[in-house]
Length: 190
Ligand code: ATP
Ligand code: MG
Image 1 (spheres, rainbow, N blue to C red):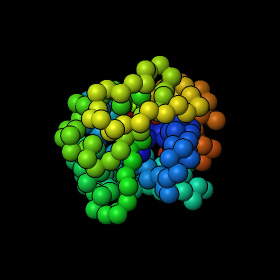
Image 2 (cartoon, rainbow, N blue to C red; image 1 turned 120 degrees about the vertical axis):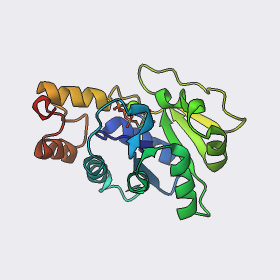
Image 3 (cartoon, rainbow, N blue to C red; image 1 turned 120 degrees about the horizontal axis):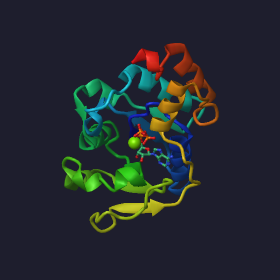
Image 4 (cartoon, protein in one colour; image 1 turned 180 degrees about the horizontal axis):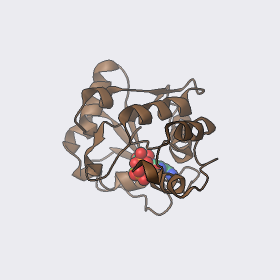
């Protein structure tokens, strides 16, 4: 599951857990982006902060792990590169890419979309405010699944912190503490 994870929240975690159960996955690898190409006009928190929050949020689940591949590659992150790296690291694995309905609707415009479909099976999950539909993938390239819908977004979490509103229970407790410790998303932090 790729994402900016700025910060990781319970919407991500429930989606990952549900898909792991439904598809009997051995492992879910969370892959925080380096510089996300669709977000190059926005300020994104430092990669190490996003990486550490993802580790904190997933550490207690033996099925969950975090990959540094997009962060360490540097430059803009394209999912095709993520999938090529994961394929090299796990040559015999069957790869799935978990994505929310909003991202799924954009995927055909992502770089080297055709090659991506050959590298992984895509799983689209519902997300409040976005319609879940097959955006015209090649036959059998995508599965659409319903997960318990959580109307949580990282954008909303950042805005809440900036306004002094709580993010308890939207993100894991350790992530709330990390945000406070590093003073992330504060208006005065720019
Ligand atoms: P932002 O508001 O900064 O874009 P986000 O909440 O959309 O943050 P991302 O890191 O952009 O989180 O998303 C990573 C992946 O998780 C994407 O595929 C996205 O569709 C999916 N996702 C995010 N939030 C949810 C949610 N509440 N339910 C289901 N999928 C989600
Ligand atoms: Mg997003």
